Structure formats: C-alpha cells, structure tokens
Amino acid sequence: MTEAISKTPKGVEEIAKRTFGLNLKMRQLLILIDGKRGLAELEKMVPTLDVPGCLAELINDGFIQREEVVVQQTTVNKNSEIPAVVIAPVTGVAVNAKNAQEVVRRTATLITNTLGPNGDDFALRIERCKTLDELRELVPQMFAVVEGVRGSMVLADFKRRLGVI
Image (cartoon, rainbow, N blue to C red; front, side):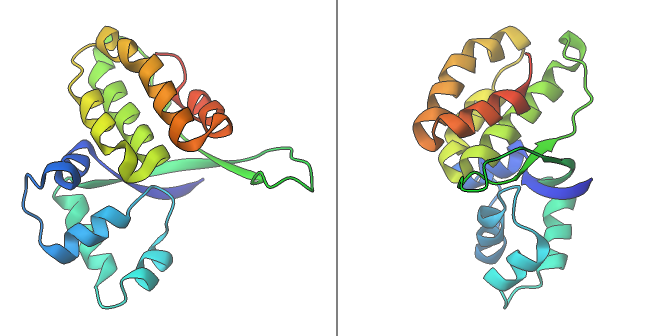
C-alpha cells in the first residue's frame, strides 16, 4: 500500500468557484494535486513553495485528503502502451443508506482524480446528491463523461474502481 493525495469536495469547489479565497500559491498547488503526483514531483513543479508545509495546511483546512491505495499488478502485452500498474482506492465501505454521503464523497473524488480539472464541475454535481438514488441517476452521465474525456480503457478502470452503487 502507498499513500495518495487528492482533492476533497471543498477543494474541488475552491478550484471551480474560488469560494474560500485561497492565495495564489496555495491555489496553484491545489490545482496540481490530481491523486497521482507525489511530494517529490510537486516540489519539482513549484520549487519556490514549501510544498510539505502547504500540503499540511491544505489538509488541515479540508481542501485535500490522504488516501491509502493498493497497487495492483495487471497482465499486459509487452508491446502494449497500457501501464502495467493500476492504482485503486481502498474503500472497504459497504454501500448502504447509512454511508451515502461517504459514497458520494468518494465518487466525487474518483471523478476528480480520473478527469483532473475537467471533472471539477461534474464532481460538484455529484456532491449535491443527498441519497444513493440521486447518485445512481448520475452514473450513466458519469460513464459518458469519463469515456468522452479519457476513453474506453479508462472508463473500464473507472467502473472497476467505482464499484456497485
């Protein structure tokens, strides 16, 4: 297992609407957080910034979160351009009405991590869901957006990571 950093719904909202008024450098770092880049890569991208300190502040303020991920090996053709490693979130959460908001939050994070800034508006729509039924109504649109932006292979991985809602 390893750790990834991703935007929370609050972070997605800040990027989309500037609701919380982050300063320019913090906002720049928040935009770069995509659930895939590690600390070293972020430090290279913004060398003038105290990245560890800023990440701690963004976590404390609820703009980003740490998630444990499992790295799963996949079987691929050696001549293929498909990556040999797929990163999947560790949820371990049974999907029922009691944890609907957790499922909504994780789904919004997954769409943001999958689409990057292209998924921010859709993530906000997901966050407005109050029940699993409302979220389920968005699933066909989610699949269409993911496939349209990232293609059918990413859609297949997205469906696997999303699981059953």
